[in-house]
Image (cartoon, rainbow, N blue to C red; front, side, top):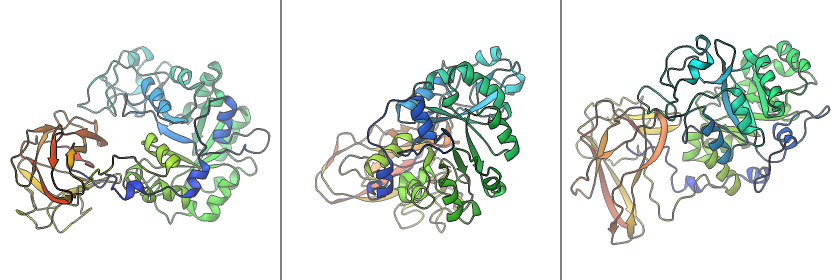
Length: 466
């Protein structure tokens, strides 16, 4: 509910992407064809991989616009610019392949139970929850799709990254063959090389990417001259052997380097949320330092904008952005009031003060907010005019709580309700509905803004950029 470090600051938001990225990204949008699919993934045509122009955009099915792993989420991801959509494959009790991230249907549907213990008919009777799901997420009318249904959506539009499906690879290949989409499917695993090569020899038209880290770095030698079209490189920190320059150079010499920037631990701390604050701390480093030629993200539109224009996010002129942890100085009772003097966020920022600040996958945010707490921010308005006020927030709860706003020690606003975003880590920019007609008369006027939160429910949301 309070602005966080995941907000793109005015300077960082305008940081240009390095020239390398602008050269890599092709102008415009090309019509998808099977050959283009091969080029995007670096598929073997003959002996050597086809060189690819551009940096293919990889995204999860767009859960911000539709339920996780739903067909509308697939369509939204492709509409938003993704060329490869990641999904998760599970097999039902009666042998059908469906899209489901978890082993159970509990989080994302109104049902319970393990996918392997439910029939397709039982799973199809369930309704998907909004966004990332969760106990208090709203139900939708969408149903769990089968892999067959998903491949029909992408057939003429892009590739599918088939995650969690290696144990049912033969069944996946059968579905892709029946739907005429073998060239649209990207198989992946970290399985022993011998097991992978047995599958590739049996199905030479299958597109395969190997997941590699320090734990299986020997796979580079194991594949010999028959290298995969890409390696998904996973590293917990920059000292890992897998991201040493000679090792990365070797992978780039035969295919693509795929890096996932969604969470901590997939690529150290180079995450989407860090990229929103400053691209150099996320996507920029992954391309420039580690040579990523494929990036998987939960922020496909922003990544594409950055690759095309050099800007992480385009904002209106004179926009003022306030980071959550940049609250006023003065301490307890002067700059803020916190019910608990302990910094419960793990001392992510300003550990000597009692305000709770957390780090959600790179989004530094106000957290553990409780009723009766308040905090002050000082900022300067460079241009007079009328301003709308929004806050980037997150909460898995419904109701999620409320807050109030006040400027220059004026009267608090009406209560502003935070909407359920379905996860503490799912940040959305939500309008406050306040200050739409408020004008500050003098350019450069110094403002003192206080956000009060006396009406927060006991289970309060985390807060993102404002």
